[in-house]
Image (tube, rainbow, N blue to C red; front, side):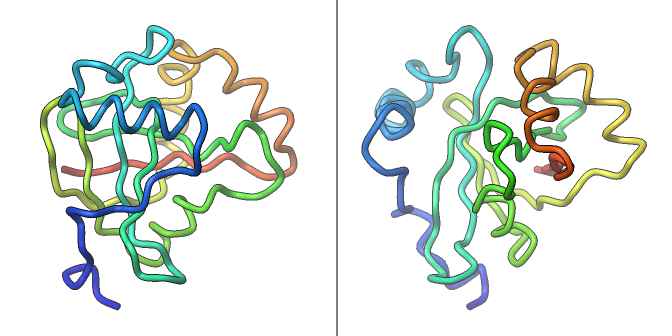
Length: 148
């Protein structure tokens, strides 16, 4: 399936629970409710599921640098990469909702130099990323750069 054939306007949301509540609040309020989550900025990343071909939406903490959005595929330190990261390795075309703005983008794994540049910014936002990195070892938590 090509990303152009994806129904971006009707994505699959997380299973019932806090993440679904976050996504629904974010979408229904155009980001006014949900953009800040526990005091940190979040975006909604919509990827193309590598198996089903459906659009799938995930809330993520992010930082931004000159129109580039930076997120981590931390999965709370789980031993495997999160599904959304595996999706972008198959289909790098994504959609973002950042507050009220909805943007098209292309996602890629950060280079070593980019990881070195942005890791501290990400842990300044969410210090638990350092704990997730330790728990995930030997898996390296991917950093993803999204060009919008």
